[in-house]
Image (cartoon, rainbow, N blue to C red; front, side, top):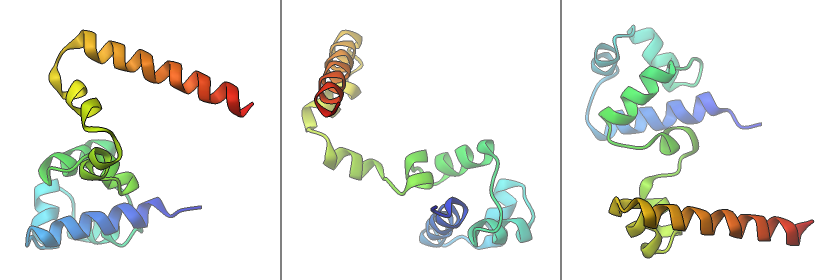
Length: 114
């Protein structure tokens, strides 16, 4: 089984270092102790959901990146640009149609695998 605490902590440490922020500064920003910040980065402890959301917003990354290592860039590269444009367009009818299409595709795929 994957060690999610370790992987999340490693990503948080990497984001912190990219921004040239010390553990002490990040601990202050998160309103946690320096010891707890260190333990999170080493995978010995975790942050609450609220703190993870704050980290995601603060470092301008998505939760998929923090938890699974999947960045928005990775997602954008995996999907056709037309799908991404539809989801970003704000056109609710287009989004609904695309969602229905994907559900239908999932059902067809599932029925072929059974």
